[in-house]
Amino acid sequence: MRIIIYTGKGGVGKTTVAAATALRLSESGKRVLIMSTDQAHSLGDAFDKKIGREIIKIQENLDALEIDTLLENERSWGHLRSYLKRMLTIKGEGGIEVEELLVFPGLEELFAMFRILDIYEDNTYDALIVDCAPTGETLSLLKYPEMLSVFMEKILPFKRKSAKIAGPAIEKITKIPMPPDSVFDDIEYLMDKMQRLQRLLLDKETLSIRLVTTPEKIVIQETRRTFTCLYLFNYNVDAVIINRIYPAQAMEGYFSKWIEHQEEGLREIRQSFSEIPRFQLELQPKEARTIPELLVLGRQLFQDADPSDIFFRKEIFHLQKEPGCITIRIFLPFADKGDLDLKQSEEELILSVRNETRRFPLPLECRHLPIHSAQYRDDYLVIKFEEACP
Image (cartoon, rainbow, N blue to C red):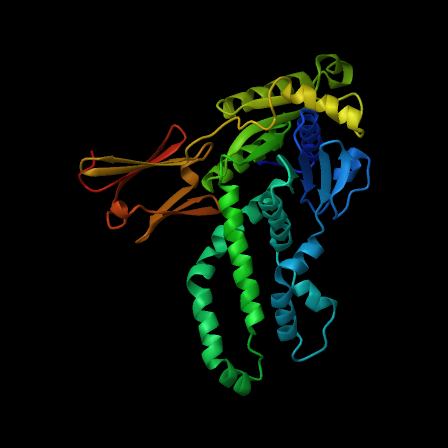
């Protein structure tokens, strides 16, 4: 099964591109499901059909689904949520304020992403196309599995054991109810599912992320930052979609001043993503809101290429051993040297780019060696260990 996630700055046309891709694939005979995880769903608008939380048929070989985040929320952590609500209402009555306190930033989007894992493990379709939330929200939810893995591995077993041993005494003294086993079961279920989701998201043979952009400078800058962050977390971006390019016949009169700006933007995209396959789509004379119109867009976008192909792979983390020296190379396109911060703990490298931080587990050979040097050149951070390094 092939999974393709579309994301980008809000308003660049992610939904239209995702819908066109799904139709193009279904036309080739593949069984396709297109799914929206964006809370502001517009997938139904794109197909001009009512789409909801149940899978519906769009046409032969193509089904569609818009995730209901409230439903996924309840499915994923019902017992834990009930316990937290009970804790918050010990001294008073529950109300809308308590419900609002139980909405954690990014958690609803994460639960929506769980459906990607469910659909993959069901293995009913040949391809899953995901119309994802704008980049800021997407990056937040992609970081959740790694951020919470420490809790799963180190803290949770201790907390569960402590609650069983000391829970009754603490509950008697403090009058605060201890979490029942069902709460810990919920947490373990969540953590296990996040780890499986993380493995799937990092499987470059199955899943690709495609960035949708337009030739405007502000959009290009965000696309570059997103690209760097995704590679920092080892996700594979296999294509960049350049949408809403003004055709030559439209660049006259009032729009003539856009000629230079658009050419400059397209040139910057070519330079910034020279290794990444780029697919272009011109601004259409009217809004594409029917299946035939979206299918035409899919053909224009990919032409003879198969949209389910993996168009690009790049190794992020490379270890090279030489006599007396170990070198680690980390691919960080578009990073600014002044924004990089590198630290070393006993078992990992802690790399920060602006406000994004990634922890790289160190190979056993490096764990007790000091960093000899670190240089950023040609889109790679090159780190050398051991004093014997040249």
